[in-house]
Length: 515
Ligand SMILES: C[S@@+](CC[C@H](N)C(=O)[O-])C[C@H]1O[C@@H](n2cnc3c(N)ncnc32)[C@H](O)[C@@H]1O
Image (tube, rainbow, N blue to C red):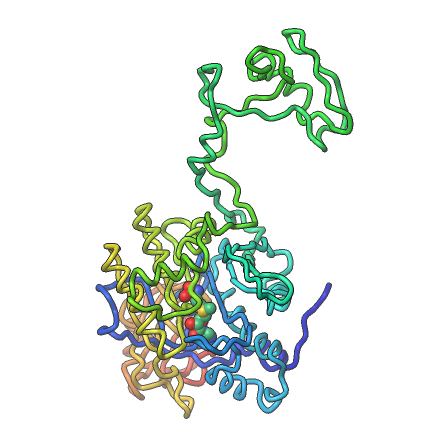
């Protein structure tokens, strides 16, 4: 199997584990509505995805990302080059001095690899990820995703016709498409599926009923195919018409199918009975949708120009140069999720994904949620959030969103728990690192923070150095045989008593696991 290597790989391959865990801080003035489960996070997605882990690990059904393509084009509102000052600083820190020698492809891989690893952890077992890309990094991305998701989980590459005009000044070919690469978290999972697309009126209009068949409108299919049943045969219908496949072709159906169709009157011999027989296919028997194709044309899902038009309807000028059309992202969401799922886009740009989610909910009454992350200071609030805010107002969407900034790391530079971290935030983190599942806030009861299998988890955390596991606390814990993992600053109980109560004491901060 081909494997991918690049300068800097060693430094980033497990970097996702080293990213500090940061808290999220809601910015009320930049949010819209109350208690919305939609999120827009301002910050580097590496840290933002990590911050989402204790809340969303294994919970995201559909991820769409549109990362920088690495074209070297510098003139955009966001910086497409991996030379963006923020990424440069990050590479310097993570890859070290070696980062000065990296080619732009090495840098791009260093940037995308740990982020894709975190994204995979956030997906549900039946979830999938779609990534927009062009020829600059298409091959590297495929190999990186084979590495992270497994070759077996590759689903397809979609070709999206992003533009219909021809650039006659192109050097060799006028480029009119992007790729969208799709991987499943686990294709073998019994719930993983790609939904059918709704049938269009145009597709349905191909079905007619010239013989007033009471079974409804129909169209026909030939009885032969280039490949079909291995054995060829001749067939005589009950009206005496003889049929055999033309030279070089085979019967498409088994002889039994033809017998049944003949008896059921579903063979069409033409208006006056003299045409080559064909099988009638009724609209009523067709699947409720159509299998998506791998080529998506601009007149079906929108083009770059449609993407710009969608923004122009909301802003007077055009504040963002490289948006995707909402209809393109709507199609991805429809194919890969249910109406109550959460959709994540960690390279949010102008916020098209949020817009698409709200629009789809309005269209079909769904309750999908979105999470978007945008790094650039000038983009996150003024473009990403502002676009969604304006869309909510203009199109009457019922949901709002919470706007968050990345706050301080959970552990400060002295390895202590950050003072501003409250009980619930800390409990969420502890429960996640212990169980790799997300806390159920409804189950939190004073110091009890949840249970999994036969283990209960407790946290004593009222602030700095006031958290002792002592005899009085023992009276508060549940009287069960389950193992009890208790986090506190100090333990004032002897080992025998702990063993009798089936308690494992974990000291804050040294035994708090780092995810
Ligand atoms: C191609 S644009 C996405 C456009 C988007 N699909 C739309 O329809 O508007 C990529 C975006 O990702 C952002 N970005 C790049 N690196 C990032 C990172 N590490 N964390 C978060 N956002 C990042 C860029 O600032 C840019 O806005």
